[in-house]
Image 1 (tube, rainbow, N blue to C red):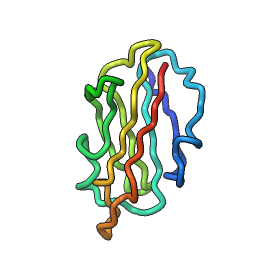
Image 2: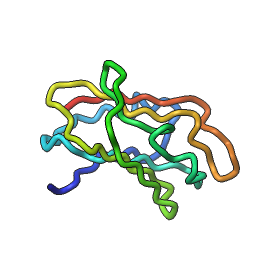
Image 3: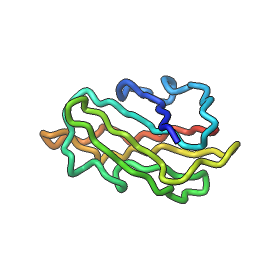
Length: 113
């Protein structure tokens, strides 16, 4: 099955107002791409600092990849999303830059298929 992507160009002040895209991907699997404006410490990019979750707080298994050339993280679910269910992409303040600076606040993006 081909991978489909939903891009976020960078982490703006208020991410929730930027991400109001209509998700028209009906395969049940698409990859979030989050681009940062500074190089990250790769050891802080993992399933504890970035994760997908359902509305009831259950974490979904996902593959997290960091592309150091583009300062971009990909979050790919390992199982399809259920139709008409809400999910969250969570980015914690434990994601750090190479110089050790944390994100100023956590981000949570609500979405559904």
